[in-house]
Structure formats: C-alpha cells, structure tokens
Length: 345
Ligand SMILES: [Mn+2]
Image (cartoon, rainbow, N blue to C red; front, top):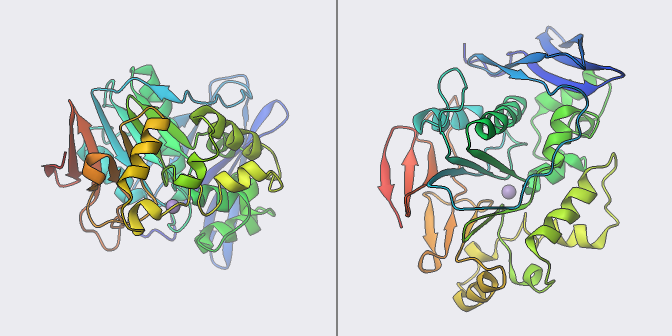
C-alpha cells in the first residue's frame, strides 16, 4: 500500500484547444505507460490525484482562466499553521494537516477562517511532488470559500525546477517527463495548470506584522529598497513565461544566493540583531518567518523577531515526528502530528 515507487502519477493537466489534456502515468516493466484523456474546458470537470496512500479529487477551473496573483498583505488571522520545505514529502504534509485539523481524511478544508502558510520548496527531493502541489492547490480554493486562506510561497527549489536545474529532482519525475517526450520544467510550465498556478505564487506575504518568505530579507536585498509588492512583481514577471528571464538582473538578484529564496545569513552567520531591527522597520513588520535553513525544532531567534521553521520531516519509510509552527490568539507553538503543542513564544 505504501510502495511510493509504483503509485499512479499525475495528473498533468494541459491547456488544449477548447479542452483540458489530462495525462497520467502508470509504471510497468521497463518504464511508464501514458494514459491520456481530454475534458471539456467549459464544463465542470475534476481530476483524481493519486499518492502512495490513497487519492483525492480536485475540481478544475471552468475555462482557461489565467491564474490570479495572490494578495500580498492580510490582516493577522486568529490562527495559522506554517510549514516549509515539504519537498515532495506527502506523508509529512498529510500527517500534519490532519493532526492540526486543517483538513479531514477526505482532504476537505476544516480550518475555518484559519490560514495555512506553505513557506516555499514544495517541489524537488521527494517522490510525491505532484500530490503535494495538487493538495495545496485544492485547499487554497476550499479555504477561500470558507473564509480562510492558503499562502503558497516560492522557494529556491521551485526556481531550480522552473529553470531546468534537476540536481535535487527525484528520478521518477525525470523518467516521467522523458516518457511524455518533454522536459520536467515543461510539466511545471505555463502550459500546464499546476505550472501556471505555481509560477503565479508570491515570494513574500505579510500577515499582520509578520513578514513570511522562504529565506527572509537579508541586508543586500533590503538595500535595493524594493517594497514587498515590487519584489513579488519581479517574480511574477520573470516566471510566467515559457523561458525564464535569466537576463533580468533584478530577478537574478532576488532569486540569487543573497536573495529572498536562498539567504542563510540570519541563521548561519553570527547574529546581527540591529540589522534585523532596521530591516523589520523598513518593511513595517515586527517579525520574520523563514524556512530554507534546517533546524531541529521550530526555533525562535533574535528575541522573538524571527522564527525558523525548516524542519527536516520524516517520510513514509522512516516515520518519526512531523513538526510545524502554529500561531493562535497571540501565541506561537511548535505542534506535532502526534498532537503535542509546546508554547515557544
Ligand atoms: Mn530552500
């Protein structure tokens, strides 16, 4: 049941002429067999998404609607759950969302007006990337209908896959792309529903007085003097095209080693709290939440002005405890999929 290698992969849903082209892949001796279906663009249609454990259903939008860019600023909700660096680990994602009541066993949003924050790096490494993407895509729609929100932020691994850098991509996806006669980045490109959606996500979101991004805003990015909205615009413009605009200097800086998806200085270099204070002030916030640099437990840094949430999570095979950050009524907790709740701030 949990043989993560052989579950049916997909779907990859492509915008066709007046129809959706829906591709699934099934493993058989010697490779992957393609199963293609088409669905009416104008009607109500849905797809089944498989994972090693079970499956869930996701409605498709009616018509080839362009992906909406998310808002960049929200009032602080009463509660939010934040995770980062899921990296194709459906086990950890599912376990935590179930344990915290974000969804039920039928993959339905049960978090009311709460928010779910996915702080970058949904893709790469793991072998359940497609299921992770579809689940978050689905919950995003469900949450909005319930007055809640899902914030899916870009991480460095999204950009790596978009740009054809597959050093951390599970061979499953490279083999599948080969079977479909294309490059894996094409399957997460603008011609496909998941690609169009993922490429339209933001790099930064503000929740009340908290700034959330994959790696945080470091000193050299703060020095550019760009607003949150300007930074997100650079990503939107550069990613929503067939070939990434790698000649765009602003994009290369923001997505580069000191940028908002890669910077590790806040956690790895010696503390520089005064610099952090200055940057928080520049962006009108009191706190940053960051992923990207692994920590053993959800970690409060700089007298509570930063929370690091990149936990290396257990998978189907090694099990163990899944951890995440929960904010509720003014307090921060490390929560686990076992139901533990530790006040950290
Ligand atoms: Mn990362």
